Image (cartoon, rainbow over all chains, first blue to last red; front, side, top):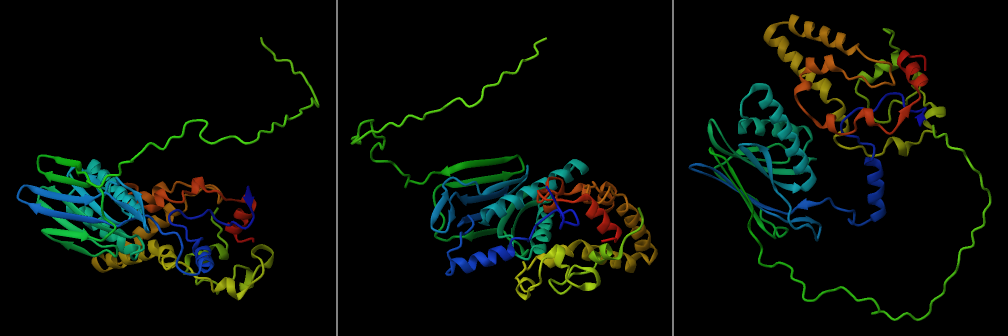
Length: 239
Length: 141
């Protein structure tokens, strides 16, 4: 449908048209009950060792007090030799690491080289600083490349730290199973799950009810009376 | 189609929300945009809205000034001439152009960003009236 108040095609990228609507909605809820995005209330850790890097993460994704995903994958693939743990808003970490992985793949196809961990860190830093922390992604990047084994942490505002060992999150929104990813020069061992939580939910009884459990008190059947209003016939040309 | 009306050139400048009503001579165009209200102009905008709108021009300015300091005035001049030529390769205003030459010059053909994934103009839900868009582009509106 052609609108007469649209003078130019909309620009690609983020669309901020809904900010005024969101501000009005917050006024409606009056008291901080707006729906919260799904966060990974997380514990992630990374360690550099002699032959490579080990990354570990839990698998619970929460949305306020509700567990939204019990088997969430928080260790994301970036390149064959680089993996990244993500804490913060689940969608943001997912999308950011996807974009990063695509850009590094284009680079390695263009140049024929394996990407280095510093390249991933620089791309992330530029991207997250550009969006002033609105993309809630706390990432731990680890990988093995031709210059050695590296572990970096990138904050949501674009701050970068190069560390030999690190953990992040460690809040009460963590739980369920544990995933471990071991990256060495020979290859990657992604163990998912490394350890399954012992507090699994086991149902005590079956909750299926057989037919007839609820007694039927009365029954009333109303027939729909349909009358033929118009009948037309169209010849089909079968040649 | 080299004629560009003054109003369609105004979009290159930095807009301040609500202080420049969209009409001829700076007067609110009631027929198309509705009545004015102070509340409409004071609505909160996203902290990123202005910085995202100006991100590409600011990057270009920064890069050109660095290039001028390193290589002299000729380098940004030649590059800007090429950008200007590539920017003119467009279809009619209501049709989306691929901007292939511009993307190659900028280096955007080898990277993927949010502007390639989100809000794709080819899949936009709103369509403009073609006659009005051409008139806006020519400055007849």
